[in-house]
Picture: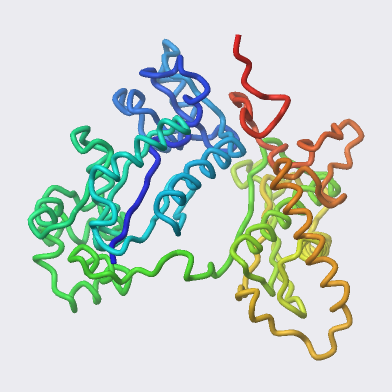
Length: 433
């Protein structure tokens, strides 16, 4: 078995450039929620010494001549572009295992199924059809596929595709790969390894023993050590359910009104339920937390959270939102300026093995809610994210707009450099003159 990885280059920036060709060869950055810090950089921005995670106000101090073009995160656009890229990969290789919004693994029977010219052609096809440049790595394990992908991204001679298919290539790749570029080796592990004189992936494999790695870095570190030697031992993401799902946000403007906070929490809960349904799972525990701004010492500080165990594990929006609002009502405190809130669903199991309650009086209602959530998912998938939603997700402020977008939980985010949703909104289609 052989693994491949397709990684979109500077994905958020690349999405913006698809619709702004004038930004080619210019330094571009994309900011996190609330325009807080940099989460994506073009190669030109990297060459200027702009680090990942730099606060936006620091960038403005550094970029006195305004050479850098900044964008607020446009997740609706990025999600749609990601779907287009993933669809092209699936057409070429069959089953894929998305790892993140800009990365996806796929599985091959052997190296002959996708030689270098075919992999390079896939990268070229994705660029032609979507405008997104990608890098492809192929090897015998996921960790080595990640390593190969980094070489494909770094060296143009690979034509966007690198394949580690021999012992000679493996040794060379490991000797040229720094520890901080190895998938699975975190910042906490780096000092320990460097103190042992280990600076490359090759050193890690050759100088460390099985027992030593297990003792110092646990099972995760051992899996990385084995994968670098070509031993497949990291399960596909699709085969393991998340232990919990959390949706939370810090607000651009602090919130004190209960109804406004309830609307935001309802949207967080709806997001969690959608994620559950997407991975075909259900959850039995719902947790809600709220907190004030801990950086504002002059304000009254308050933070609280509470959990609820449902009688039956569910994934439908109505029940998870209802439970979340009940919890919010119990922990809400008047007079507090809230800066952040969130919803967590846990005790997650597959939806194919739901343990029902003996005296469940709401079985018929739950079936209706499940069908309703499926219909809502179908409509939103065809017409745009959150085209329809529960009434409680809508803001109750009389001054709020009644459009579909007004109830999104992103309404309370600072997004001063937002681009258009070119591919998902009729009102924001690209105009060609």
